[in-house]
Length: 382
Image (cartoon, one colour):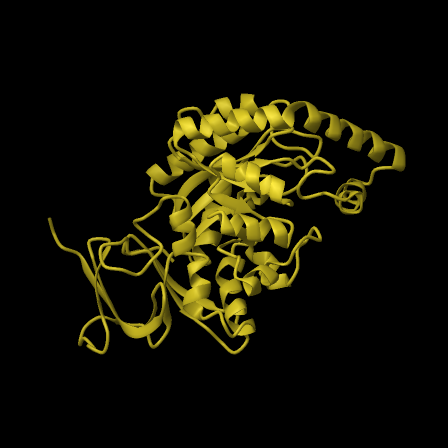
């Protein structure tokens, strides 16, 4: 077999616990060697730019925006996937868990078969070399939806599924514990009258009471049978966290309170928050700010959620805002930490023997980084 070797020299290497000046040797898609101060004569000059591990995205519903860009409009599946893939890769993301929503509720959702078709299209596009990042599947399961188990059944044999989150967006639950939040998000958004909104709330609460607990437990059992990593969603109380711990949850997505975030972190779950929350300085739904969790030392993972570029942007903001958070610390939130939470031990760090998933980044005085080059498996993809 012909050996393919690439040398990247004169870089600032963002290792797991420190930033050093040095060089990387890539051989046959893996990081073969690291050097500091060797100044090799050959190789591509990084001009002092940062080299980071490829970013790992655990929760993004950004693909939905390409598939359904307007109400009532659906786009060609392959075209939507390629557009999404191009944007995430240009943001430095080399491994992405695409969220597929299971369970239709009165906020919309997708019909049975749509997400199955999406997953199949992702797999086909990947097999045909259309995609730059590596795509995996994250199933977002609305446990209060009557049909969520029927939707999940379509993924019974899908090996791409690596993560499953358990959600309940009914009023009074998790993300929307107060009616003020729920009214702003749904009544205003949907243009409902007082009577329509009251009826809508009553139906959603009835569905949650009837289905949520049974569906949540059934999905937990299915995840354990399949070896799928579990994520809780919008935990607000210590009771929520204890339930998640008893279920074997690995990732605590978007806890809505400091109490829940601290309890999840202390229980060994990876506390995941949205990078847009960091960039904006607040939650779009009025819950806890991710920067507060970072300052308290209970933030473990960032997700781009609905803005892919936020995943590379947010760590530079945290580094600038908090003296105790260095760049290596901040970059762990989008590389090594998410990799460990879902059992991907072959990536997320710059170490010999790991995949050569790398991102060349140039910072500037405004802390808005410029992604200059992206490699996956040692091959340039952006």
